[in-house]
Length: 586
Image 1 (cartoon, rainbow, N blue to C red):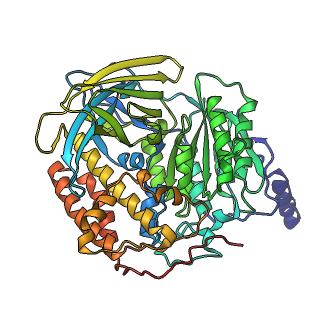
Image 2 (tube, one colour):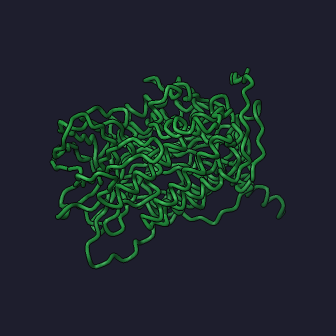
């Protein structure tokens, strides 16, 4: 009799699984997704979807928040590839992503900020240690007059779109697309599957939602599935939803566009309220092709959603995530990008910055430079760098950022100026932008280059920004050369020293090789450094370390650690034999 009753109980529970059920007076388990095959939960994770922790007490003196550019918010994928023996992809390291690893002096000259956005300007002039050319720089410090204690994010309509395709079942530290291509032995520091890291990260993210936020979930493989409607968190059974998320398993092919389209549809069930920030968080190990750039595909849909007030955060999972898509994602209004190195480190990021990552504050920032002596030659730290002309710099979105004293995390855009006239004059700068309600603002300022014969830096902020940008430039040029057929062909001979050094400090988009390096859906390349680049890295490390010591800034050791890892590799000798670099797989 007991066996019969137990069997009936199991059958009843099975029939109820996935169905909407009320677990309290107002709380609903509204999970709708049902896999066609029974999924066994082989994971254990003690995570609760409780409300966000109460912030620590603030200091008596009002502390301001800062601002940082949208787009890439880290370079974790770049570092993860190196740690696991792979050559990183070109866009796995960006200037804005590397800047966001640091705090920069953005202090205003003789005043305090009372507005939403107050730029500060600093100048520097130097003789480039490698090219020996005279260079002029202008930094734009990104300050805000909002007190940290007064900052509150909007209520949030959050739709999570999760890739559950077969590739998400691969190890975090391996290239899924190597199944018919290269095989690379890895250090296997992270043993979890990409799916497990993704689901644990979602649970950690949803833990930061409040009762008056809404949350919805979409899953996609070769089809898209509405797993949870967009409902108030206070009316949702958080524990039940958490369990459903952690039970998910990978399956099928991949249709990014179908997933995103279904995510946008969830917003049709509610009235878009100006009091809410509307955001899609799209988690994938994506290796999309260029077809996704069309208007009716993933990136085109993200742009159209932005125009309706629905913004997107892309989160890349795994070392084989193709960061080349960041170039397109980052230029979309209100968009940003993070990579997941591990569920633990991502949870730590969310605990520290969740409210900032979902709250854009400034849109359509335009800086105009008025000078007879200088033009804008390059922009470091903005995804819209290509939108710069001789007079104008544009940035789509600024997000709030943490501050420490007069320093702001990632709070700088660096402009390289070209001297086009003789003599010197004050550079007049005017800024215009809009807030989240579409109201327009503007302000003006000026900057001047000091009349020094040698190098000078107005403050440590611009000095640090130039040093970090030097590092990113060298890394990007190394990746570009090394990824040319997965073979670094830089031959080191002493008489070529000046030309090699000069090439490796060129702004990468200006190199002839640049248009050919943007290849999508590619298999892995083994991490290697040629004899020529190893000597280059030794030279650059010596310069970098000296500048770091001048700045007395230990945070810069992060870049130094990467240089040391690359220098420990056995140098690959130059091999002039022809290369079969055909990458198409049947």
